[in-house]
Image: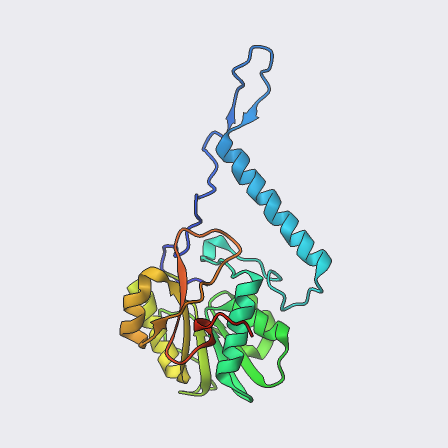
Length: 243
């Protein structure tokens, strides 16, 4: 997700940037065919691997409008999706925490929302608060959200109406977390599942009273910043067992 302010939260480990002049000439006298630099080759190889993985998923899995990757991440919007295993673990955790008939709000956490919908649990209801309006394809469960206006919410999103709020603030900054925390505290009855950088541990405790879990979330891409999960209740994310 994104807000109007600049800056990114999740820089890719190693950058994957291509040099300004990626082509270089061969040093051999008998071969003057342009060759890619090592950085360009690495970036190209990474791209091909990602495309092959996406094709493999489409081939082996039944894809729906809610499948992870059905709406592709946009780096310019600071979007980096969780991998399928992480999304499943977090979705199941939210379902367990919400309880039968529970309500789950996903704040700037579209890949978790998608996994919740893909699981198609009849025992819970869920919605997504997200800046990226591509997610409006999910109809009445989508609500436009900008963390810069944390309490500018529709009337039908009433105070303390969700059994758990799952949130993934779009930037690793104290301002972003503090404002997102206002939204979280307004929406939740009590339970909070926060996903953000390990470097935000102190601020997460300060603004939301949450503690770091043992479970370490993973993204589909390698990120420079270590990510962690934080909760304010007895969570299965501190257990080695998987739902």
